[in-house]
Structure formats: C-alpha cells, structure tokens
Image (cartoon, rainbow, N blue to C red; front, side):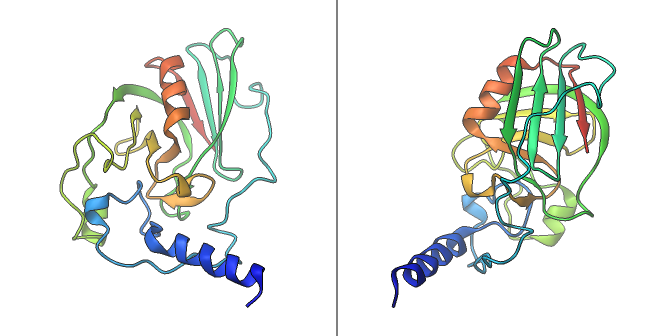
Length: 199
C-alpha cells in the first residue's frame, strides 16, 4: 500500500466515524447512535470550499451599514461582517445548509443573542431523526456551540459548532455555523438589530 493510499483510507475512516450528513447543527454526541458513511473525496457538495473565499465590499448588498451588517454567501460558504462605522471588517468560513430545500435567502436581522445556548430539534428534524434527543443543554454536546445569534426567521441562527469538520461544507439543516472562536468574536461585535443578508 502506498503512503497516499493509506492517507486517503485514514482520512475516509476519520471522516466516516462521525460525519453529520444528517444535516442541521453538529450532531449531538447523544444522538450519534449510527455509523455514517464516509464523505466521498470526489463529492463537491461536501468538500471544503477555499477557492472563492475572498473579501467583498458592503455597497452592492446594503444601502448602509447602520447597526452593523452581516452578509452570508452560501456559495463561497463565508460570512462577512461590517461594523456600523465600517472601521471593522471580518471574514469567516462557515458551514451552510446541506440542500437547496433547506437554504433560506433574503434579508432579516439579529433578534436575540445567547451565550451558552441550549438546543432542541425542530419538528421536521425530529421527524427525520426520531432518535435525536428532545433537548440538549449548553455544553460540549450542544450542536449550537458556545454562542448563537438568533435571526428574525424562526429556527434560523448563526451559531458556533463543536464539530469543526462541518465548517466550509454543506452540512446544516438551515443554520449558518462558525468555529466557536469566530462566533465568540462576532457575538461580541454584533448588536441586536444588526442587518443580515443571506445570498
């Protein structure tokens, strides 16, 4: 066996051990009762996206940055943030919805901020995954990670994740996921009422 073949086999074993192809938030540890299929290397829908990860200007997307502005580009799998006075610009890699059916686009705003969020599956998630728990308290098993920004759309959030393999991939049930350190940084900068646009 060549080194590259062994590396690919090890990578597939690692990705297959707990990859949450079920979508949604990072699959809670309590809900990881089945073995998931490995992610095929050649499947572009689940591979990390690096090529189109680039900075953008806010002007094509917002009339102003009043209150702060968040742009989520589901194609490049990136979140852009501009402070109200435009002195701060941040660009973060994200996870995005696993399918077009679960992808919501348009304008909304941040309506609530929660540090140490709890999580409960939506009715449609529970229907698809009846083995998932009804409630997960804050902590390392929580699929919302350490912080969450609740949006004006019911069930939609920008949140952290403890499953870092999800970032850069189509892997959620509709929410936008960030590394925990990135959502903590964004959480500290964003105020309720901040503009949000998903494209």
